[in-house]
Image (tube, rainbow, N blue to C red; front, side):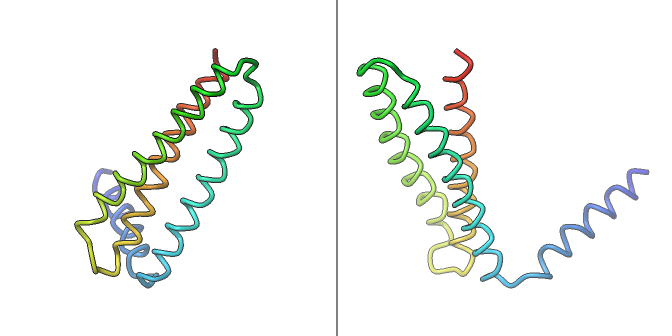
Length: 113
């Protein structure tokens, strides 16, 4: 059974890596990040609108600005190892998507309070 699962997984990975060009994978990573960023921004706007005090709004705005600086610096640092390579945009945008999805989870915690 383990061999079957391993074979299926390897076939899936092989098909993904050989069925697309690097440019197509880079574009898909950018599109995935763009979608995550849009979802994150919608959550952010909704939470900001739900806050009733200026202090709450100011703190969220400050944390969001700091988070954006962190996200960009972190992902640039990760992608720097691929500087000049064709997969650098894939690495960068995959990182941006991942961190943005984590931020959505963090923002959704405001709705739980």
